Image (tube, rainbow, N blue to C red; front, side, top):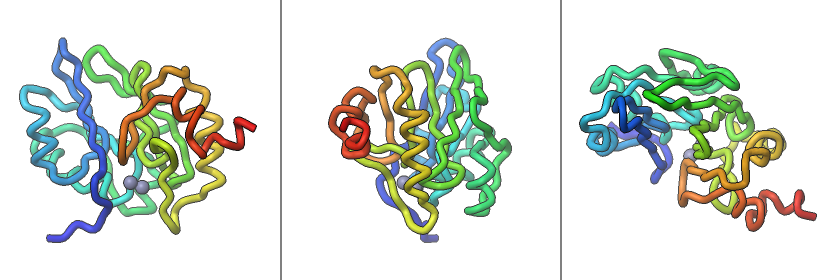
Length: 187
Ligand SMILES: [Zn+2]
Ligand SMILES: [Zn+2]
């Protein structure tokens, strides 16, 4: 089988060291590699920042292996014909152990793009990458994406660490200072 999708999608596994409950953010391929990261953990959620193929390619395999619930925004569920156990809304919180994953609806890259916040760690999918943004035609509404970035992400505390769907980890302060995305706001 060939999976159509992007290469080198970042998947993240977060876990509570007390309860071992875990969340997978963007279940990419190969699923076996992600499953190996979850040894000894009890996955509760498999969440997708958006419905682009590369970001969800390992979803079904990881769900089958772990029994965790899958979740995404309904708009991307419809657009990309993907099913989930739960459809997330803005400001909702998912619990895993002693932590809470806060859902931020940040439409633009896709209509159902989400960012997830855990403490001062923000998982931005393709909404905001280090030094730029993710753009894919035809789904991307660039204007809407920039509004989401400026009204939601740019208002997080400066020290917020950013974990994008591709490329390097960064932080908000650094992006505000150096990224071309924020150039108009600096002038
Ligand atoms: Zn994407
Ligand atoms: Zn992507």
